[in-house]
Image (tube, rainbow, N blue to C red):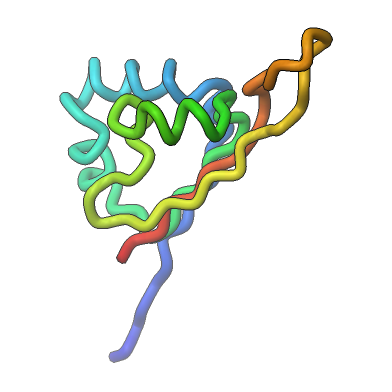
Length: 96
């Protein structure tokens, strides 16, 4: 049989860095957690970061985990002082 299935998960993380800390505390590293769950596509909502943080701290953000292509669309909303809020935003990881 040619039964191919796609494992797609969507998760509102309510802050990606906090979620990364929890994953690391329970699984050692994010890549181990990904291997356990074997996602083909993982969609993250409400990552609460911005382009600058992802670019300057890619390892801390696990911005491009081994075996996955990643796509980030952080919020570009500005706060009252004109700075980026880092609220909302999404990230998507797709198995290579």
